[in-house]
Image (tube, rainbow, N blue to C red; front, side, top):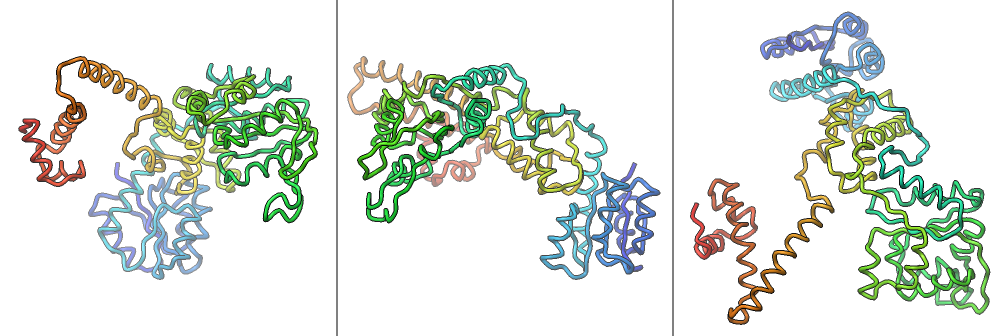
Length: 474
């Protein structure tokens, strides 16, 4: 069956011209010359695309959109106006119109936009709405995977003690949320929860921020300042990205952990503090210790209760629940009409690797809802991530690095033990990687050397020289 397009415009001649163009392209058309006829047509027929003039004689077309969507939530609406302005385009987008055309209407542009709008409507009609469980919408962690169940157990056990916790995980996995949950479920829940991002502050300010300073402690210290530890007294302090803490400040933090007291910069008196410390990092602190960038004694003081957060790619069964959580949260926050989610979207988002973890998924849902021109999230609303060149996940990259290291290590050992003249190792290693690289790129371009040179970022003469050197003939 052909798609039905409703042409709502008070200009008789334009209605007939648009209808003739669309019917020639295979669409079935209906016509309306005012607001009343438009709403009547929407109630009477299963319309796929609506060409809606902003001025219909008796009403502003934009004011009809909400009423139209009550009777037909799947139709794609394309706004038409004779006076295209920035504000008109913005107003159309705010009303969740699919597209926007200005008069005089270009036939090619019309057919292209109607084709895409009809395809979006067809997708919305064909897909089933995903049935997702009702979840906690208050910002708490969600997920029923075994990996997350283990995290919840550790949070519960940590909450009943005052021991220091070290939360480990990639960026975007929810380390601050873990700290909040530990605090909220502890006997300190009604006292302060203070967050310090150790990676966001200049090293010259972090000591003062943590421990405070007395008046005159340094040039700009015109008044005394209470540090974050004293502000958190009785509660919890969360030290995010602890691996970025300057070494000179690490010693003072170690003293706080040992003595439970702070000494402000420039001061001589100490102040006792009753603070639960939770630290977090996305770095391998063992490597930082080996490089003398992190104190080993501080590491052991912090790592009393370690909690490791799995990356999202290792708990994909939790993604549908997270999609539901973020969709409902932002629908309420932006006061949007109820938005449904196609099962195709859930499948695609579940298959994606999410290198940015939960934070990337949250931002993707937010962006899709803002840009969605209907009442269902479709694959096209996630084009920025689903259609970008696929990158290796951190795990895949780590595996690749390990494989490359193993191959090179064996080759270097063999080279050193052989009778090969010294000074040739670099050239041999380069050849190992360059030859297959050039071969793969040439295969990709079907032997087109100009395209291959562009992809590689070298000039064609250099490529020719390399092909001769490596005896590659395609």
